Length: 183
Image (tube, rainbow, N blue to C red):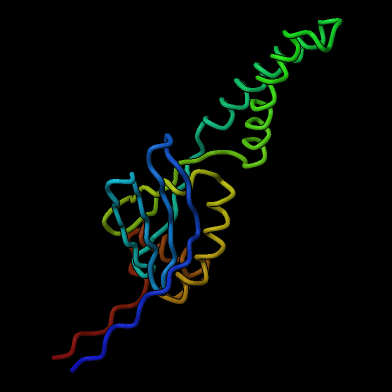
């Protein structure tokens, strides 16, 4: 008889929501990452082993700045409207406060969360989209956390060794002398 496999313990690294219809999360296991996309009816799982992870590719998007500009402009218009009235208790001023307060909260939350990005993990099979990582701060935190784990799985290489291999590959010279063939 074989012994039952021990259960894998996961720790959630990141979570997010896309267009209010899909929940996404990224989990760290013992030797892999697990990306989960859930719509409520279906779930999609992608397992990325740390030994196969070649890199993290994050590209900044314009969403953060665009949302800040739009919300900031609306808040400025509401502020002008509120300041241009003489009576602070008029129905129009109260309506501007009621509509402007949630916009101010969304603006401040977006500002604090920081720039948005699109994140992919590079594997030997190509890029894998990770929608749970939508903020640059989360990606930076993930890289700091994964660096020692990936180095433990793959081994580490000194920067000078990496550069010499790159130079040798670029110039076409072998990186190490070839051993003479044995008869």
